Image 1 (cartoon, helix red, strand yellow):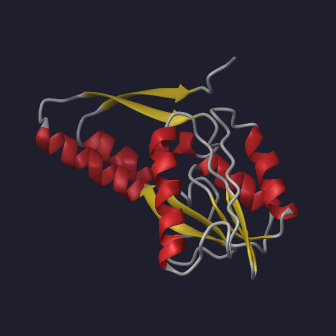
Image 2 (spheres, one colour):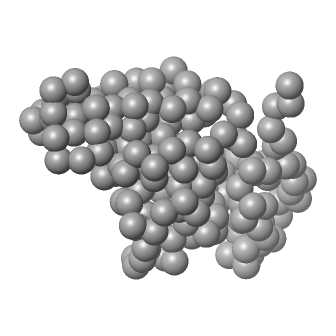
Length: 187
């Protein structure tokens, strides 16, 4: 989704078929917040939406479009879309509200000092993963078999379950993980 207003362009790329209903609600909320800030779509801001509909290869194309539109802001909803936007521009601010391990995915240098033009929130970090495993062991004390699932499109998430902290917790909890890589849906 990209938007152009009186002062320039505000861009948002929204792409992920699996979470499309949630994403559409998020887009509605973003437009509502813009309105609360005095930006009215069609009056002083133009919002152009982009939905990849499960086709992650379109992220690069959408990111290039946002740069060509001279967007003032790009908002993305998936880590692969954020990587595409980050690769397309170092000057346009990029927001990803719910990044999955932004440090591990290479989106930011660190949570404390992200650097660059990307900001947002995070859902998953190695530290959080380790804590979740500890909590899981407390809730299900006899649990030993576990599964680690990661998104094949996010190049660094496959290493998340291999971090030293996660490995220590897996060992301390006597978990025997099986690792699975989620592949994109093919046509």
